[in-house]
Image (spheres, rainbow, N blue to C red):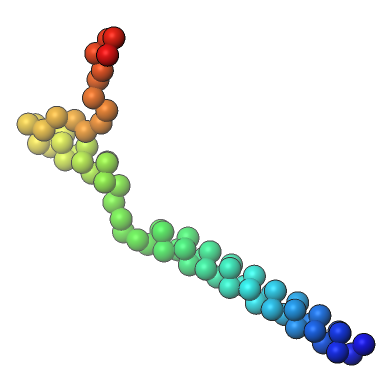
Length: 67
């Protein structure tokens, strides 16, 4: 009996440790996404195209009727 309880306790501890690792990794991923410093490339290109008058706007091109 004692060995079964020991194994069950070890399994429970292993489950708790894996759950804690998953939570830690999830928190790191969320924190890393906020602190990445990445810019939105499409927004940046659109702002740049507004500054430079010669560039056409970025985005889907209008389709002709019947095309």
